[in-house]
Image (cartoon, rainbow, N blue to C red; front, side):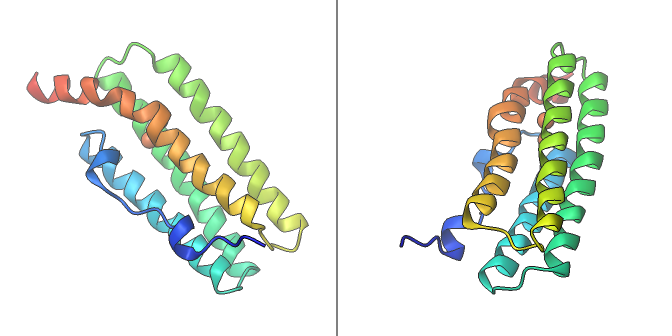
Length: 142
Ligand SMILES: [Fe+2]
Ligand SMILES: [Fe+2]
């Protein structure tokens, strides 16, 4: 059976993920770090309470991050704030579902679930937030 290694799952931060807004970039990096902690627990075969706590930490950080990001977007005059806000709400619902499922299956995530966690973060940054680069570049000049 094909098995994913820690390296396959781990998210390494790099400049290509930067949206160019310091607070947002910092919070995205914190999301990477918490997710990588989940990977480490998963690989070490240590699900359970630590895993649930870390997943819950990722959920709170994400909620705070979306709030801050929306506030910064509004201040910078983002045009597509409503649709972005809607996507954030969907992401939170998805993450809440994942963490709730964790509790039900005695906090033992599957490889597939780890991939869902990883893609959850990447979807948020790569397919939504990177589109905001021009907004932050413009607000920096202005
Ligand atoms: Fe973000
Ligand atoms: Fe976002």
